[in-house]
Length: 383
Image (cartoon, rainbow, N blue to C red; front, side, top):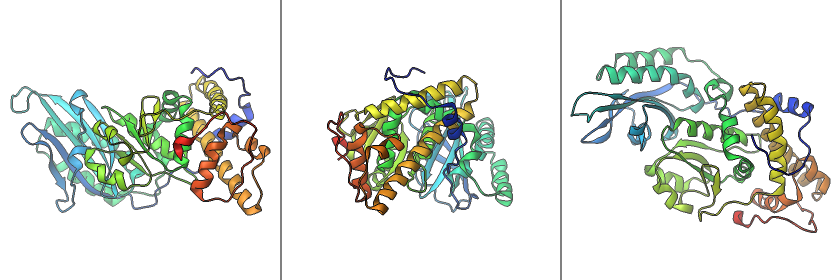
């Protein structure tokens, strides 16, 4: 990974070890992990996306046909989608099979999915859903195995469920860090401000859904957390409009044109822009922190231990978030202004002061910030 040319000290080996072993709290959802529904969504050449079958029949799945079979799915052979549906969450496995008949126009496209109130509980079903989706395209109309899986799981599920269980996201945090570069710190700042963040994606959707989960983990602490919606469509515009904070991804390009109606931050590739399409500024502090973390990540990645790299990155941001909020809380409690030493202790820089002022105002904290002789950056885009 290529770091910038800013000459700043990297993390020491002890600091790296401390971050990898940091006792940060991963996202935890305490609600019931049982399955609420299991379903099959298919593409019909006449009707479009349809719910082919679902169990139990009484459970409402309005809109699931567009989330479980996203725009552009015909361009990939398989995919995994995660999404919110009526305050619960779904995970669907998609399979496309080439067939020799004109009725299906040469391709059979189906997704098999489940619904749960606990999104972290969904990931344990991924492997089985892929198997059931394959069975569904091979043997259309055979639903016995789906009913059996639904019933058997609900009789034997276990709790608790935390991010540690999602082993199949190993490497996603590193991929996100690598793809965003220094802009990862812009996203972290936006998460702390509880902004609405929308990631552009094209099938396969699975990687972007993992990025949504990683971003939620990036800022998760006792002080703040973001709400992951995962994959959304144009049919979610009303939800996106009234949500005060969320992280989501979408392949529906029309959402980009809606600007501030539906998002505050739009991410396309490594570009992080506001609703007007303007890039958010990168401070010198962002570059310094990126260099520190980049150097540590490169050393750890050289050991080919991807899970440790993911933990190092998450640990870095978790500790950064914890120290920032602890310091601000102590300043409020002690009724004293922020000093340059405080800024250094929490790995912030003079160039971060405009952002810090925005954060303090957002939180409603009565904290006086010192005024450096020269601020290099302005964060007016956040005001």
